[in-house]
Image 1 (tube, rainbow, N blue to C red):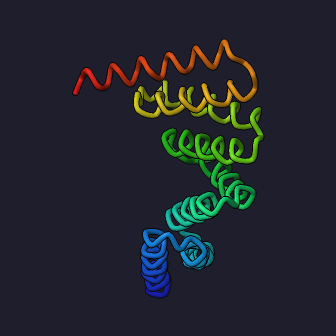
Image 2: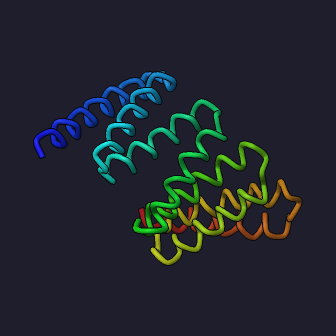
Length: 168
């Protein structure tokens, strides 16, 4: 309907303002605008607006060090992505969730999420994100004093980075 189109346009404007605040490192203001877009997207049931707004809200909270709030948004996204999302979205969500847990010193949860992301990135043959996951897993395994796996993931990350450099 015309009303839903107007609401979707409003969501785009709110998200655009949120992005401007994000690039100015004004995360509180950005989160406010992304949350406004989210509420409107929920009113009209627009899944694209809902998903992108939730991802933006999570990023803002994470940027502010509000990891618990970020996790709430990532968990909402996880439910959506498990039901009907792409593998790329799902793996990115696992990776971001892992970062939040790492920041909160929830190392076992971080490791679990990084492993899930790695599994999907390997299926997708996404070497850049495989490298990121391996670096993150090396770090979290080190925090867990699992030095054998920390070394294994670290060596894999370095090997992939060297391969990429040699291709360029």
